[in-house]
Amino acid sequence: MILSPAAPPATSGPAFAAGAIVRAAAGRPGGLREETRGVFAFLVAAADNAVELELQEGDAGCDGWAGDLPHVEPSRNDCTAAALTIFTSGTTGRPKPCRHVVADALSRGRPGDADARWLLAYAPFRWAGISVLLHVLRSGATLVVPESVEPVALVAAAREGDATHVSLTPSHFRRLLLSVARDDLAALPMAQITFGGEAATQPVLDEARALWPGARITHVYAASEFGDICAVSDGLAGAPCAKLERPGMELVNGELVIDGRSTGDLWERRGERYEFVGRREEVINVGGVKVSPIDVEAAALAVPGVLDARAFGTASPLLGQVVALEYCGSVEERALRRALADVLPKPAWPAALARVERIELTAAGKTARTTR
Amino acid sequence: MTNRTHAEIVEYLKTSIDEISLGRVAAADVGGDDHLIDDLGLDSLDYATVLLGAESWLGVKVSERDVDWSEIGKIGRLAEFLASFQAA
Image 1 (cartoon, rainbow over the protein chains, first blue to last red):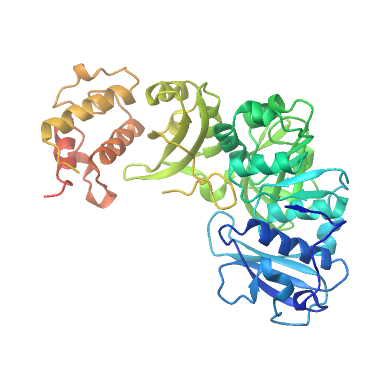
Image 2 (spheres, helix red, strand yellow; image 1 turned 180 degrees about the vertical axis):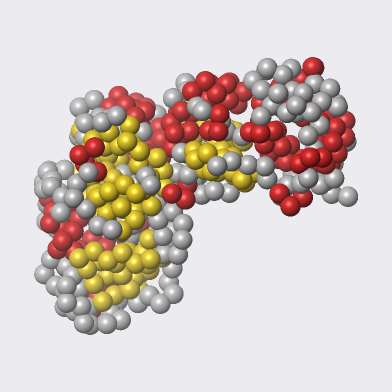
């Protein structure tokens, strides 16, 4: 499916009448294309009308679902500024609403290339997906929407839609590497790869560079509550210090605080860059020593034969938590254990190590690191 | 899941210690009455790793409430403790 502001989907109907506030259900299995059409149409209508869309997972209390937006009766008619509300719980916690005024969201970010054909690899009801839709609208580009975000469907859509740009999570990228032949990936004429949703490690950036040597490789740090915070395109993991030392930003006990609001994200200064250490709730406390699951994963991924990995905390009656590591690849557990012992400090050595068929991802395409 | 005998659990623990110590403590050199930390030189993370692996192998779950750490430092006692979690 191809969408563009030049040929937008229908924006007539009760959901697009001035003042309409609509609650739409999101996240229906198999509904990626219809959902994207609905959200895209809403964003197009928002340029001319004060309309508001609340996207929430689950049908309870909803007026309809995103794919049926033209026919959905609004729950209220007193909207005064076009806005989009998404519900996010970050990695854990009760979902909380994050409201974005569309005009403000469209005015942020640099103008893009009108000839770009963006492959959508995120659900359109999460900030990462909405960010892509906004970018397409801002730049007058084209959106290529796959049937689903599974690797084979993504590559098929990229070929059929002549995609040149893509934004995806590093975990999703690793899954592509696992599931799709390298030659097939390298054959896609990609001009821009944008990583977001989670930290882009150096091996991920290097792998993307190797596949598409002519492409611009960018990684974006964003949060649902704040939108896009900074973008880095210098080929290195982490962010130059200047990007996170802007007015309104500070690190409090390692956690980034923006305009007095905690992001829940932990960063550490290493030389002239800040590196993302993990979400506060994902950090593993091994007998009082804090271990970053991202550092453990990076060490594992640097071992030849390891294709994908995820680290998380698991309960230990002796130490409170210990590190667990699941990985995909050809290396034997014993050999991996020895390799990690050479590069990681002792508390970070995985106490549980398991080779798996695939790494579990969250619905947002991020590595699932919830402590078990 | 099949219940393991005390002897089988001891053999598992010896192999696990060999693996976790990266070969520093060979399974063949581990005696049934050895203390994991005092005699074999494992540290608390090694011990926690051996315990976690044994729980997974046996299909049991040990919580902190169940444990008297002073009683399960030796291989044989640890094996008895783990065996007690198996289905009757």
